[in-house]
Image (tube, rainbow, N blue to C red; front, side, top):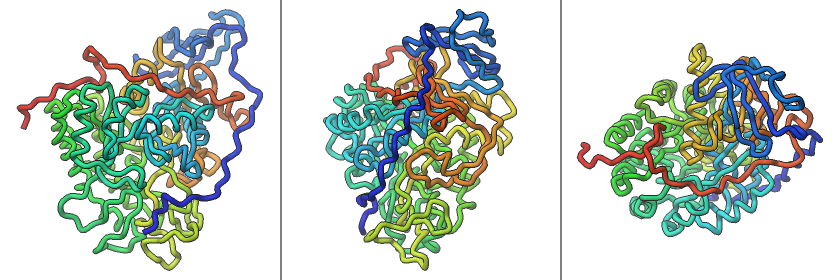
Length: 552
């Protein structure tokens, strides 16, 4: 079968946003001050005034009250954002930016601009879907070169784990990658093959004492399955499908929870090879995996998991016939499954295993989604691309469509909307939970816990100004990622980002000139400082654990 991942399309590169002649320069003043009656800091939700060094972009002082402008030297830039909430800039630790090589899908410029629009000030780019993948130092250097001068927010990079590249991994740690990702099932792109158990053993031995995180797309085909081939993104239909191939229920049945639990059991069986190595399951979907991960943690295995806004807000029962905008792997599951993911996520401060929420922004060109003509985002397929099924309208086949949800920069309002629907926003802990999931814990996951994720002295002054009461509708004009194809189009959201500040500089101000984007140049930096070992036990959830060989 022809793979849609190899098809290139003549999509023009979007024009760069022109300079708006604005800058957040504070003249000769050495500081900038922002304040609000509501802010989420180390002490929870309270009134706060934040003093920022214009020279370093760091927070130099905070006060648990709104200090009036008159208390600061004349000429100091001062904004009181009350009643909006000041949050740390979000750290999205799972984004596919696809550059170089597949910039018709996404790119550094458009992807990071979408992030800034949604209050995200740091993204970490996944190692696959760009060509070449980030599996060698030479390939990382190509990605760094492509990113130069194109980033609206700060960007870090993951390295990739594929068969035969274990010897590259320590060098990639030294070059500053924030962690590594491998697939236990076919990734959907030929240049990023799945790893075997033998490959994983080599990786664990190689990285056992390195200051890094090893992450897995945790799906494997169990020994018995009548479902689907091992392709993640596109696949041949099942030999015995349980229904029409344009019905979401048929696709869901082809990727049962056993795919996830089987893969996680395989990872855990090898964890003893690297007891100090942090392990992580990306985009956890199946609630059946939670008891496995909980038991492993009680045995001292240092493993955590993330989930995504789409698993927390979309449900299989509500996906319309042929609406392949909802296809991703692992799949969006039932409403009952979603409810149990929320139950686990809300225990993040106790013994919950889901510690982070990330976008897993995985875009493609709209034609690869094979959407029916009546679904927003529909584009006719490229010529010569084979389909797994010839439907009456030649579209809507969940098995031939590319799997991935586009949502970078939309995570905060998606979460807040769903939390509002569930009646979870009445207490102060609601917004502090969001900060833990999307700022504090994601920063710790990628070794940025001393720089990102908190509004505290010494941290980068990355700030998201959030209006928690605003309502708005997702439209193409509010989806700033390159291809306007998302299951959230047309949905009403609760909560809207009013401004995004990166290291003390405004990068987005809603309703401002130039669609709100500030400055003559992109000011995002590439986060390439190597991670370092933490010698002491830390209080965060990401602390080192000692493996208990006597565990059952």
